[in-house]
Length: 291
Image (cartoon, rainbow, N blue to C red; front, side, top):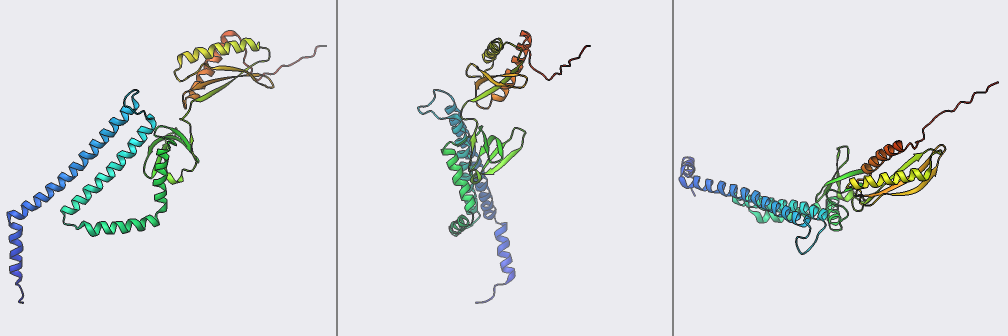
């Protein structure tokens, strides 16, 4: 078999490149790649809107035959949205590689073997993913809950497949692998109780002070929507060195007890001042001996 002249080969290649069919083929491949990309973005957008719409419906009372906890619905909605996004992006990538002439069969087979190897080597990653699913479906906590795990406490911003994001009240965002979450304290599941201790002097009338405190706490509960039950004056909590401590409790919505306590303290202080009931403070009494 004779050697083919280089000039003939170059001429054939040049003719192919200059031909209209070649450029039409290139343009068609680029068009299909662009269509795949746009279609993927559209599908992710539609899925996100549909999931958001479902979550809103579940938050609205009386809609739908099945009632879901809004917290859990929002959390599952974000997780499903992430899973759909990953799946669509993977399919789009495979279609683009197919258009570029990449044989997907050996690529997928190699990916399977590599995935198996990674599964054995990245057990912590698998543990994070499995723990994340159990956190959601057991409803241990949800997006928007205030939780404490380990040394971290704050509001849950996102529960992903691998990590959970917690934002503390001072603004720091903690990213915690789901597998590292072994113990959780959820402050948002049930109502909290605000405990206020009011100190009055020994010279004051305890019954009168308790009545003023009870009346003031009731007035605060009527104007503060975070108080779900009328506050209770439990009575004398402690006999101190220079004061009598009267305890007041108020049941509040989750994680509102701190603000309610501040408001009760301020209102009770003003009411005691108006009634002339003395709040004890350090003082010194000097006795002078006269001859």
